[in-house]
Image 1 (tube, rainbow, N blue to C red):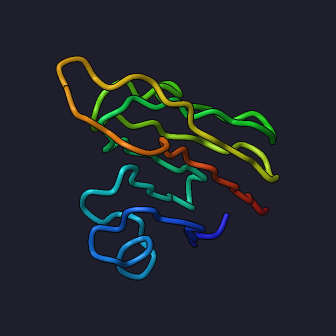
Image 2: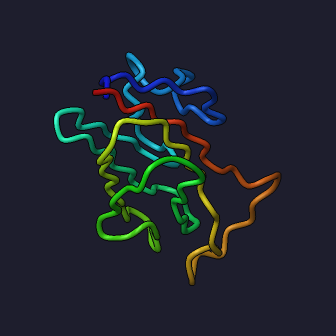
Image 3: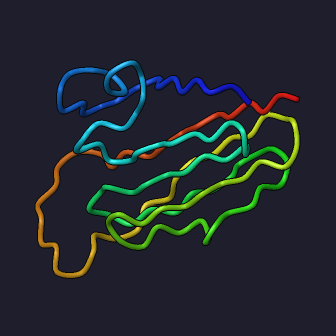
Length: 120
């Protein structure tokens, strides 16, 4: 697993930089923050969106989710551990806006589509 994170699309970069400075994907006001720990073969997703999200693996070997794939509140996170070499594909499933967050939204909801390649 290399330590590169490359975004195909960042639809709302607050500072106009795709993925933040140097492609780190950790800039303020992003909907999802992605952190990579290549040594432990884990990726952590932090949900900064006003909607809940569930991370779903659509293909690839089994993974371990900690604490689980659902991010049910703002600032919830899930850590995914990859146990085998392979290509993994993920997407997110949107939940509802959090209770008490009466915000008007327009346009299509965004979902994450991610391909992870784990090498030996």
